[in-house]
Amino acid sequence: MRVLVVEDDPQLGPWLRDTLGTAFGSSDMVTTLEEGRAAVAVRNFELVVIDRGLPDGDGLALLRDLKQQKPSPATIVLTALDDPIDIARALDEGADDYVAKPFEPIELVARAKAVLRRLFLDRGAIVRIGNLSYDVLNREVCVDHTPIVVPRRELAILEAMVRRIGRVVLRETLEVAAYSFDDEIQSNAIEAHVSRLRRRLRAANCKIVIKPVRGLGYLLSGE
Image (cartoon, rainbow, N blue to C red; front, side, top):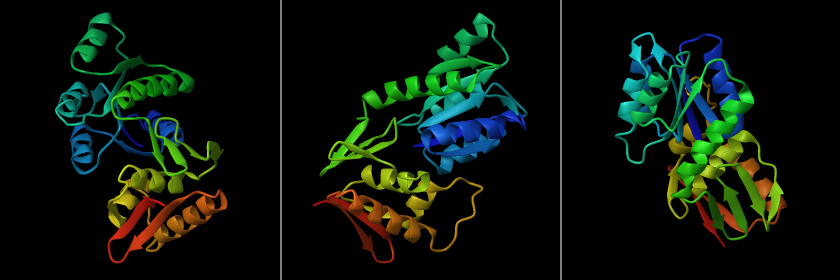
């Protein structure tokens, strides 16, 4: 799952990115409307958290753009404006939720889970392949109904392949899934992550197969 934070506060922005990244997977942060539009143009996000007061305009302008996407991401608007009229306007523009500053981390994560739960009701929150199941919302991997621990980047790679079962997943797609805009990626990083993921699944007696496709990426299939 991928999260975008659009927030210009130099302390709050990185904190939001790290908090939501820990809860949901890979996360990116931008500080302006223009950067937000550029980010959603090149990557798909399941959750976008938008501040109202950005240097180049109102975050609701980006919200309107997002609601034109198919499928559109879940959205949460953040603001210091807590007037009921402002809240109603954000919700009328299509925001899934509205959080007034200041707020506690547990509140934001809980609200994000709630809007994502509604999003995934229509998309299927749990994917099953062979004896493996993956809960997209809670980011939980089970083999034969037994949970197994998968590190963050391996989990992002597994999710990208699970969502594209039976199709070749390009190496570039896996890089996008596992790394944020500012991360440095070693030339063999994806291969190393996939190798460790294979060993981890094999140790759990998982019956799925991850096959390399020379020059392209990987193909995941059930036995």
